[in-house]
Image (cartoon, rainbow, N blue to C red; front, side, top):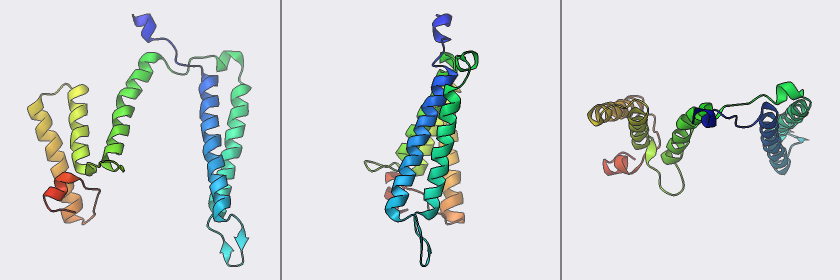
Length: 172
């Protein structure tokens, strides 16, 4: 069982190439959209896409260099495991809830707002990783959210994304 969990998830070369390709596509999209906005120096100065165009070009060139570097790695260095399955599981245990948390704050379908999403996020981590009891989870997750609500909304007057609970309480 231990041997199966500690298998490698891809080699260093493979993941270097995958990340370089992702950034290459990202940079190409920036360059393409900058051309749509206008990437030249006009009579009144730089057009809207001037600086993003060059940033996109730098990303594209750096990605090509990383891609070439990945393919030129020696068999010994490039063939090393990038991450073990047990290590990846630990990273995903944190990354997936964080992604869901961000999606719950504001999305086009149904947004919970930052305060309710934060309370759920804190409660989830306290329960799954910390193994705390529900009473302690309720006190900490609600207490932290109320403290942040008072600090941002009342004292600092900084409006943050709100959801149905804040609307029900008259804070929009």
